Amino acid sequence: MAQRDDDDYEPVFKKSKWGTNRYVYNPNNPVGIVLIILSVAFALVMMFLMKEQKGPFEPPKETPWSPPIDDNPTYPWDEDHDATPSAGTTPRPTA
Figure 1 (cartoon, rainbow, N blue to C red):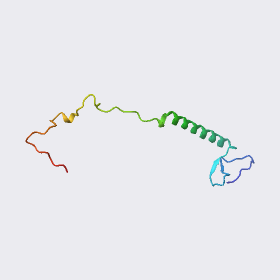
Figure 2 (figure 1 turned 135 degrees about the vertical axis):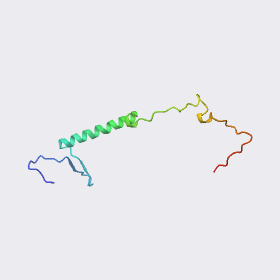
Figure 3 (figure 1 turned 180 degrees about the vertical axis):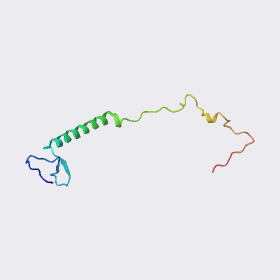
Figure 4 (figure 1 turned 120 degrees about the horizontal axis):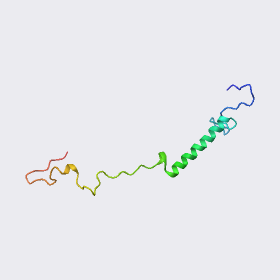
């Protein structure tokens, strides 16, 4: 990257000094320090939301059974015909 004429130019990202080829935020650049602060604030908000189980980490709401078993123990399709076979019928073979 070409350097500017002024000596106090600092890039937003600089190579890590840990021996890897990764880039890190540069705290000597004003944009870099803002990115560091925003990253830490975002991480803290996400950890708070996880702990309190709010936002995207909220467990799904419990839905009641439809229909409740105490209200009507029979199903609407069972009301049309008798559940017991008559004497003259034979059961159908199942596949």
